[in-house]
Structure formats: C-alpha cells, structure tokens
Figure 1: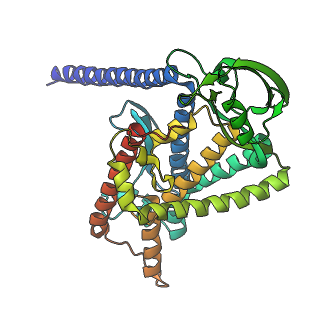
Figure 2: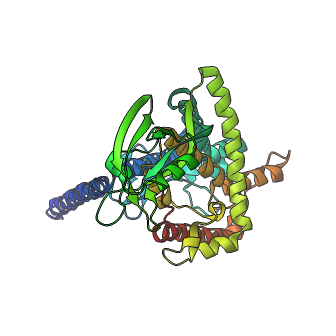
Figure 3: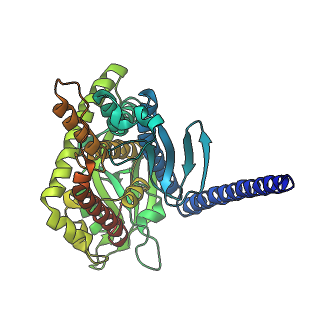
Length: 422
C-alpha cells in the first residue's frame, strides 16, 4: 500500500500541473484574441476603437458599482467578469474570481443568494443579498444606474467647464459636411479647395454669403467657373480658390452641406455645476419620454426592425428608431461630431442606460429594486423578513428577456442594414 502512495501523489501533481499549464495557455490565447480584435478594429477606424473602448469602460463601471456596493454592505461576490461567452482568462483575489470573456458587450457580478431560488451553503447565508436590510439591497441594486448618473454628471461638468456647450447662433451657418466626390472621376470643388466641416463661407467672389440661401444662389449661377472663397476657420480667415463643378441640371456645384452655426460657451465652476444639474434633470426626462415613445409605438418600431436593407423609410422618425451598441459606435466615431458633441453623446448614453436599467422588470436592476421594495412593504412594522417566491415571476422575466433579445438583435440588424449615416 505504501508503494502506491507516491504514485498517486505524483499523478495528482501531474494533473494539477497540466491544469495550470492549460489555464495559463488559455489565458494567453484569450488575451491575444481580444487584443488582436481591438487592433483590427483600430486599423479599420481609430475613432470606432476609441468609442468601443469607452462603451466597454462604461459597462465595466456599471458592474463596478454593483461590486463595490456589495463589498461595502458585506455581501459575497464570487465572480466579476467583463464580457459574455466562454471564459478567456481569469484570476482569483480573495473570494472573488475576476476575468474576461470574448463578447465585450456587457459584464456581470455574481452575488450569492440573489433570490430564494439560489442554493447557498449555511456558512454563506448571512452574507447573501436576500438576507440584507432593505437599504443595503436598494443600494446594491441601484449602484449600476448611480454610476451611470455619476459619469453623466462628470461629463456635463467637463462639457460646461472645459469643452464648451454648443449653442446655436441665430442667423449664421457653417459647413456640416463636404461631398468628397462630384462623380466617379473627380473630387468635388469643396474637397479640392480643402474646405472642412465647421468652416464658415463668408464671401464668394466678394459677394456676401451670410445666409445659406445666398451661397446657394451664388454658386448655382457659376457652373465651371473658378471662384475665390473667403473662409473663417475658427479664429483664422482663409482665402481659397477652386473651380466649381456642375450638377445634373447644369447649375454650379460646390459640394457642401450647411447647418446652423454654433458657438461654444464655457461657464465658471459654480455656474457649470448649476447648469449640469439642470441639464441632467432635463435629460432624465427626455430618456423617460423616449422610452415611453418606443413602448407606445411598438408596431412602428417592429416595422423598422424587420425593414429591408437600404430602406429609406427605416430612419424617417428618429424618435421610434432604436439604436444598438453598434449604432452608438457608428455615431460616436463619425467625423461630423466635435469633441463637445461627443461628450454630449457620452452623457446622453449614460443617462439613458441608467434610466432604462431602473425599469421595474427582471432581469433589469429595477426589477430587483421593485422586489426589495415590495418585500419591505410586506414586512411592515413586524420586523420579520419577507422573501417572495421568485419562481412566480419567471414567466414575466422570460417574456422580458425575449423582448429585450428581439429588440436588441433587431436594433443591431437595423444599424447594419440601415445605418443612420452619421
């Protein structure tokens, strides 16, 4: 019998070593897969890479809020993963396993004993979510949305204090975009001249173009003519010369699209804080109204989701046009957006996600808040803990998950088949 002991010990050591090697190799391959994917995305578009990393960061901070709140309130978190799908690599710190999975479209924190359906050892029951006081459960469940709101408020402070709030200038216009190609053979006159988005065209051949209609009329009457343009780019005046093209109707063509001009207004610290609070409240209201508009027009939303590729009507009404993470990346990476506009998009994204997650349906955070609130009401002044049977809510939960899956996948299809064109 003694002779068998060393054999078994070495066999176990061998299996353990092999497991460690396999785990290390899988971790290296997993990290390499994620890194290569991000590098390829960066080669396609650096802007899309940056926006993608920002969204990943936002998702991470959401779950970080849940994790930190759970630790502060004494709950046990066994997993904290970024991404979904098979585990790429992970490591353990204390009682929690941290790791990354390949689909970086979300994250999750696994808390023990979230509902009465979770089986938990006797030694951990006191640290389960379900056994905590109402304020602790409320804090943990709402922590994700609170982190979104915090990021939104910080973004607004940065916008109003440093980047500047874009405010429309009445009676002024600027270049919204430049047509790169007049036809398959040559660039447009605007592209050849080097006109850029945000430029203000002040004069054409000495004639004022203060109004957009003035520019249109001036250019229409000069097909194939070489003209001198007076441009204001930021605080610098430029003089550019270009030869106009000809549109299909024989009119002159410059190749620009105009929009109402904006100026960046910056505020002092106190004013920026007040403006941030006011704007935040307004954006919360806009998010609530936006969600209600989509719910009230589900038929129209469904028609858009199942629309054919390149359907011009798919983007007619943006109020009922859902946008997925794919669309958010497309919009955020657009060259037509300024730094201030990108910050506004970041803030709006965080506010909407924060509000949406508070809807009182499982598996959203708001569902857990609603359950905790109902349990607290049932407890009343008795002091006896009331835990509802979550099994009764499963049919509704499955229906919500099915709807979110249809809505989410449909929005991804819509953003690919009929992109917004930002």
